[in-house]
Image 1 (cartoon, rainbow, N blue to C red):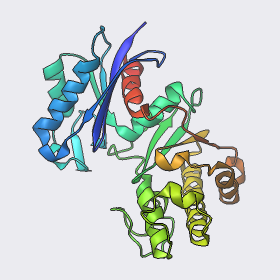
Image 2: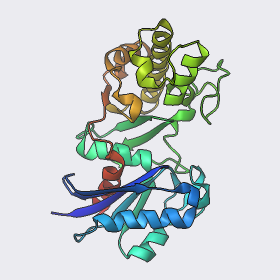
Image 3: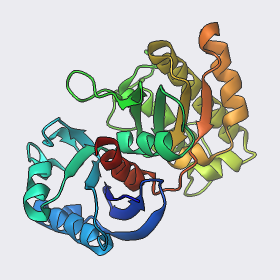
Length: 294
């Protein structure tokens, strides 16, 4: 049996896991990220999370970050942690922890977890689409994470799905995939169209019988189908795995129907599925990086 540690560094929390090479979680630990306290505190919190689960000989440590990471382990702008821009986080932890360190974008860790142990296991060509406060993506081609020329492949949230839209609901530009298919986007359009729910969130809107809510959800599913059809035309994956909060809504029958209206016929057999792994997919995928590179 082999063991590895995976760390998922988010904007609010850090999660670490100790897993076996068949994906079984042996230990798990969570701690606040404390981004407001800056670089030194965040690095200390990552190291603390690692040490809390490290009680076996390991093959290495994988760390998933919410930013672009180059081949050398340097954090590239833009990111949610500007205090880490141009900082070599891989070299830092190799120096402090004296073990094999692999750094990767968090969306890539998500889809690697699903590819290794979850909904996309056994597929060679896979795309993961994360539908949360933003829209992100990880791509696997021929069983390998695809990074692209500048290590920024998979930023599908910026993909244009409506050139006439003027609304900007996230930091992506108006008309983008993210500006229609993120949680904040659903709430934005619900309020804009006159929805009456107090303190609305996507789940409340989805289950509301209000005509305005139905209109917003129908448009969300339509734009999601357009975005997925665009991904399939470009990459022709066997499976698209949806993750994060919005993926838990029961949208799949209607989404698949709308997708088939827009996808080229030879590509309509692409499976669109919900994630199988828990909300620990980021940390599990980070650990899977180690096994993939042993």
